[in-house]
Image (cartoon, rainbow, N blue to C red; front, side, top):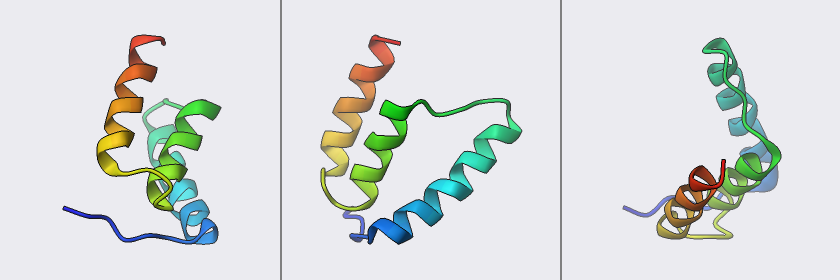
Length: 61
Protein backbone atom coordinates (compact mmCIF):
# COMPACT_ATOMS: atom_id res chain seq x y z
CA UNK A 1 0.00 0.00 0.00
CA UNK A 2 1.55 3.31 -1.01
CA UNK A 3 0.96 6.51 0.89
CA UNK A 4 0.38 9.77 -0.90
CA UNK A 5 3.10 12.39 -0.75
CA UNK A 6 2.22 15.39 1.39
CA UNK A 7 3.58 18.89 1.60
CA UNK A 8 5.49 20.04 4.67
CA UNK A 9 2.44 22.09 5.69
CA UNK A 10 0.12 19.08 5.40
CA UNK A 11 2.60 16.96 7.35
CA UNK A 12 2.78 19.61 10.09
CA UNK A 13 -1.02 19.66 10.36
CA UNK A 14 -1.17 15.87 10.61
CA UNK A 15 1.65 15.84 13.16
CA UNK A 16 -0.10 18.39 15.36
CA UNK A 17 -3.21 16.24 15.42
CA UNK A 18 -1.27 13.05 16.12
CA UNK A 19 0.80 14.69 18.88
CA UNK A 20 -2.38 15.92 20.56
CA UNK A 21 -3.83 12.40 20.40
CA UNK A 22 -0.81 10.75 21.98
CA UNK A 23 -0.54 13.52 24.58
CA UNK A 24 -4.00 12.56 25.80
CA UNK A 25 -2.51 9.16 26.60
CA UNK A 26 0.38 10.83 28.44
CA UNK A 27 2.90 10.10 25.69
CA UNK A 28 5.18 12.36 23.68
CA UNK A 29 7.28 12.03 20.53
CA UNK A 30 10.92 12.99 20.82
CA UNK A 31 12.61 15.00 18.06
CA UNK A 32 14.02 11.93 16.30
CA UNK A 33 10.63 10.21 16.28
CA UNK A 34 8.86 13.32 14.99
CA UNK A 35 11.44 13.83 12.23
CA UNK A 36 11.07 10.21 11.17
CA UNK A 37 7.28 10.46 10.93
CA UNK A 38 7.50 13.70 8.92
CA UNK A 39 9.93 12.07 6.47
CA UNK A 40 7.45 9.27 5.89
CA UNK A 41 4.48 11.65 5.54
CA UNK A 42 6.27 13.80 2.96
CA UNK A 43 7.58 10.85 0.97
CA UNK A 44 11.24 11.49 1.81
CA UNK A 45 11.43 7.84 2.87
CA UNK A 46 9.29 4.82 2.04
CA UNK A 47 6.98 3.19 4.55
CA UNK A 48 9.31 0.18 4.57
CA UNK A 49 12.27 2.45 5.42
CA UNK A 50 10.13 4.16 8.07
CA UNK A 51 9.42 0.82 9.75
CA UNK A 52 13.11 -0.13 9.65
CA UNK A 53 14.20 3.18 11.21
CA UNK A 54 11.38 3.13 13.79
CA UNK A 55 12.50 -0.31 14.91
CA UNK A 56 16.08 0.94 15.22
CA UNK A 57 14.90 3.91 17.30
CA UNK A 58 12.90 1.64 19.59
CA UNK A 59 15.91 -0.58 20.16
CA UNK A 60 18.04 2.39 21.24
CA UNK A 61 15.41 4.06 23.42
